[in-house]
Length: 337
Image 1 (cartoon, rainbow, N blue to C red):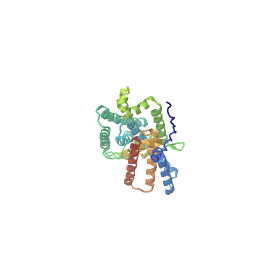
Image 2 (cartoon, rainbow, N blue to C red):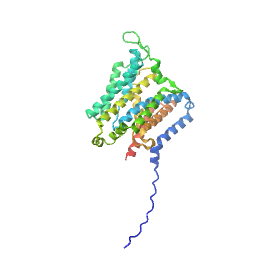
Image 3 (cartoon, rainbow, N blue to C red):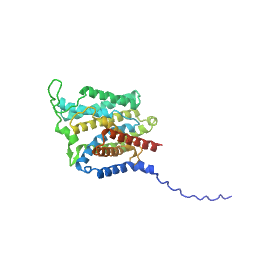
Image 4 (cartoon, helix red, strand yellow):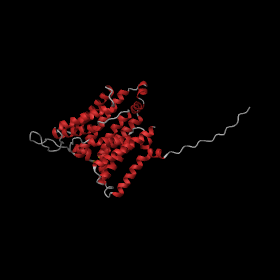
């Protein structure tokens, strides 16, 4: 007995929803919208000086946020980056102003301190198995206390008075100031440094075996361990990288402002976290990635610059930062579901 023929009609591809479109392209649209709005309402927005200031501030946030991105990739989180930035800023200024060191020592000491903070975080999280939020929160307070105790709450600057009645023997040297204030071919050097780091980190995470192992460690730690991946080693690497880039951001910050300000990195924590989480949605990546982090930094930098030009108080800006961070977290959670 013959079977009846069954007619099959090709299924139509479901049109992407508005939320899918916003998740993939919302960040880029938001950047364009914010630039257009401030360009129309603020006469000084589209000027070379203003864009130079935006790029310099973005470069610092991006460097710190890339470190956070590495910790997020291995399913961790680093709250200590703000204090690490402050520690590196103070260390750079002290090496120059208080100890009259040259550029090599001035760069080496803060970077080693950043690596040490990363190792401390990994010791608490990987070895002692403390929750990453609690461990890095404790480190944040401890490091902040260290730099405040060392400086006694005072900033470090050229010709600052010393307790013995004299003045500081050193000063910020031009080669160090060039990092945060100099330009090459009309582009701020700090921006070129940021672009180099972004490209190098993107290529490393995307096209190298160790980079892929970072992602595998974060996606399923137990499965990665059973596959022979040394997950604890890669988690340690992630926190060391986070501390290193936070210290690098602190060096650029000290060079830009020309002083060692206590707790200077505190405000960078929320900006960097927001940038890293906004990066989840760029092009619909759905995971922490360096290119997305860069776009998140651009959005935060342009927005805060425009709000400052509009004389919006800094405490009101914190409200807006919080709203943006909640939105980024909500989009990330929705996409995972």
